[in-house]
Image (cartoon, rainbow, N blue to C red; front, side, top):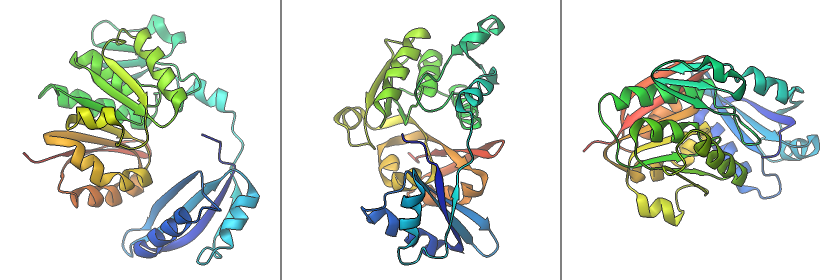
Length: 289
């Protein structure tokens, strides 16, 4: 994915108006944003702020000229040393039975539990983010109650969740991502961690790929992506979940929890718990049955 360098932020409005702005820009083929976030800024008055991410200032300014977006402000995304940030994020993480570390921390592996060596390479995410930790803790809790037969990791990134599940559960996991490089890194990480035969990784957008359709419904689905795609995929994810199955969602900021929870409850799923790690929340749902 191209790195976003400019944002267009629209002042807080009622959710219906904010959602309409998002749809308006998504439907405009001339100014397609790299990413979109919608954040609740005032729970009492149900006000939501929308931020669009663009590669250039010109794209952001052009989008601001659209009807309804004139009140927005364009700002540059602060420059970051991404290599340094990735290394900082690779300090070991303990989440239940799982110990997640980079290659430089192999000597810190603990006795017992499941140690996973994950380096980001060129795929998105180091695997040591608060969202990943929340998903691993939710997985650890789930495995204490039951062992899912079929598992999907949607938006697998570096493959952390798929590999952790395969190692702990001893059963096959389907890992998908829209980025072919993420698929390559996932396969490499699966081989590195002794899960090559259990993790099938493929490039796919959404849930319409024939392999996903053929293996559905799933007893466990991870979707550690972003709030907006989670809303867009809500109906399909709920349908792909087997009766009694568990859905673990992350990539959600704390102020987006109510939005995502309401969205998935409206699809007939039962909310089980929310795990908070730093600025991020991990939501766990179950399909009745």
